[in-house]
Structure formats: structure tokens, C-alpha cells
Length: 535
Ligand code: TNX
Image 1 (cartoon, rainbow, N blue to C red):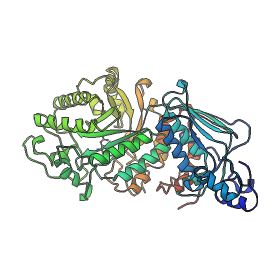
Image 2: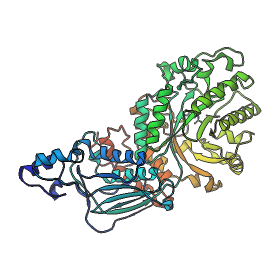
Image 3: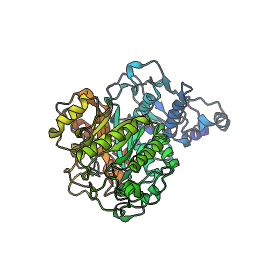
């Protein structure tokens, strides 16, 4: 935009309406994109100057595109956006007409070449254009643009000075369609706002699946209409005996909607038939002796099971799956199936097969932990198997059998991306049953070679899990998730040949100031050259 003069210029500068001189403006942003894009070119030419007077133009009526525009608008900072919000008042104040700067354009286009989540981002002095086939693609392009801005944009209510973004052309699309994080809200309960915070952080790194582990021995965390005992009894305990808590139907709908606005699909998990003590403590009829179990607040696993012989159990399973499925727009329903030690293999298989039929009847795709691949049960083609146990060699024949039957695999190997495991011996929270997972362990592996022998096409993606036996606050979540979750995001998104640990750790270090600005309680891994001031 045009420079104004005299007092007008001082006022305009203060309002962030004009480009400051070179000395006042931010330097070129070092490119430290995570996840690494498929391709980036840096053509010659002058930078784009992003300021309070940069219009963000949604070139579409799609409300999702308008939301992405306002997301960028918010990032640039509501307090510097006066010119765009009230141009007439501002020009009266300045005593001369004001102009807006070059725009950022969000464009839906016939770009099937980019796939359902890909985008192209072009930065020139005259405009920034993000183009995609879908609004999801535009959203990911906006996240890339965000990382091209200085970290100061991440401070809440910051007055952002004009920032120069060097010319670039990014063409990008994800490697995998399932880029997930799991949060265990059963061992400890987390409020809606904590889940929203996690969703915000996930979105920044282009993750697209939030798996909520909603039930376990220590707590039942979701209201089921007509089954109030589940939350009134089972909802009020947690590990260590704290107060517990649960999501009302409205809370769950809020989480699902907040996630959807960030192009994240919520996958609800009701863990069955084991990990079910909270339900057993709430409903007598799903116990074989017809009597409720006492609540459990320890951290043992494998001791509980619903009664697989009783019809009441299947009525319960049907109610739960129907009520949650009805409020879940995503295609998936996770039924657990892990660590059942109290049933015969045949009983387990029959129960899981019948539960699978209930899930299918509700129009959802069943997801289960890898035990379902080992059991002698007919897996519907398209069932998702979440591989979690280390030592996959012995189980490879079962996984291959499942894949041949049409199963899809999501990789969550505990010896790599169980975020509840400690980073190192000094980590104050977390478990260590599958060893330690430092920042490099969580990053420096590949899904295709982890399961040697499984066809690459059977792998849908990766998911980091955060079990909550030892954590109770959002600060704990952040500490265990960051930096490891950023690495998992890159494994899920970036082409294999675009990523190495040596390059990644430098880019990761450059995210330090951004995380400090966000108030993120991240682990200052000694393996990473963090930029920015230390705690
Ligand atoms: C194994 S992963 C479990 C969880 C625990 C976790 C702790 C899985 C399917 N079962 O019940 O919380 O380890 O790391």
C-alpha cells in the first residue's frame, strides 16, 4: 500500500497499516516447515509484505473456506485489522484515502492432481494464492503459510509488524490418509477445553484424526441417553481416586464440531469386552453374576470383561454404539478389543464378531487393536486394525492374514510412538513398559519398514497414543506430546525421501519460539538445537 506522510504516517504505522522501513520490518523467515512438504521452490523476486492491511479473500461461497479466511485473519491479529474492518473511519482519521495491501487468496479449483488433502501455495510480491481441490487442502495450505510467518503471530493479541514472506511455490499432499493422535480420557478425565487445545495443536501439524479413548476400567466418560448409570457411577472415578468426569452429549458434539472445523475426524473408542470395569460397576446386568463390580482406580490391565453370554450385554453394546455413532460424523467406530485375559479365545472371537456386526449396522467402519487380527473371527473387508504391540515379527502371519481378508492397518507401535512412555530416565511422568521413546525414537523410523513383509498399500497411516495413567493436566499432555507428536505428523504427511533426522531436528528447533509464543509446555529435548529463549 501507499505510504502516508507526517502525523498520518505515525498513526498509520501504529495501526499497522503501512509497511515499515527495512530496518523496522522482520527479516525473511527461515523455512522450517513441519511436516516437510512434497516440494518447495524459491523463485526470484521481491517478498510479499503481509500486514494489518492484507485482505484475505475467500474466493468461494463455501462456509468452510470463509472459516479458513477468518482463521488467517485472526492469526495476523484482530488489533492490526482495523483498516480492513473500518476503512472509511480510518481514512477520515488519516485525512486521505487508504488502500489495502496485496491480497491472500483462497481458491477452490479443479485440482484433482493434488488429491483430497493437497494444496499449492504460491507467494509472490503481488499476491499469495492457496489453491486446492477441497477446503481441507486450503486449510493445510493455510497452515503452511502460518509457518512461513514469524513466530510472533502466535502470541495472543500481538500487534504484528509488517512481515516479509519470501517468494515460494509449495506443492504438497499427504503420504497417508490417517494421521492421528489418541487421547485417553478414561484413566484421567480432560475437560472439553483441553481437548480443544490439543485439536488446535494437531491442526497446526496437519494431523487429521483424534481418537478418543472414552472408556476403560477406571472411568466411563460419555453420556449415553437411557443409560445414565454409566456416567453417574462409572463417570465419577479415575486413576488414583480423583473426581473423574464425563462428556455430556452436548460436550461430545462440541468436540466433534471443533475438530471438524480443523478438518479433524473424531474416532470414538468404547473399549470392549475388556477394559470395562467402569461399565461393570454401573450396570449389574452385564456382569455374569448380575452384580456390579466395585470401582477400580489402579493401573492394572486385563482383569475385566463384560459377560459375553448374556443378551443384556449385547443390548448395552447396541445402545452405546448407536447413541455415539449417531453423533459421530466420521466413518469410524473403535471397539477396543485389547488385553482380554478373562475369556476363552472362542468367546472373545464370537463377541468381537457380533460387536462388529453392530458397528456395521450403524454404518460405521470398525477399528480395533491388533488383538482382533489374531482372533479367529471373520474380519469384514475394510476393518481397521491398529497395530500397537512391539515384537510384530511373531504376529506378522496374523496381520498378513487380516490384510488378505481386506483389513487396513494403522501403525501405533508402542516402542516408537506411545507418547505416554518416558523420553528418558529423568522424565518425571510417563510409563516405561515398552522402553523409553526419546524424540529421535519417535521420529526416526518408517511405517513401511517397521512391518517388514506387509504390503505398503495396506498401511493407512500412523497414530500416536497418549495414555493417561500418569497424567492429569493439559500441561502434562503438552509435555508428553511435544515435540514427539510433531515428528509423528511428519511421518504421516511427508514423503519418505524428504525426511531425515539430521534435517528434521534443525527444523524442529526452529519451532521453539513458536511454541514459547503459544505457551506450550514442551519437553526441551537435548537432542534438538532449540531456538529462542530458554525457560
Ligand atoms: C497398553 S495400548 C494398553 C493401555 C495402556 C497402555 C499404557 C493398548 C491397546 N492397551 O491399556 O494404557 O498400554 O502404555
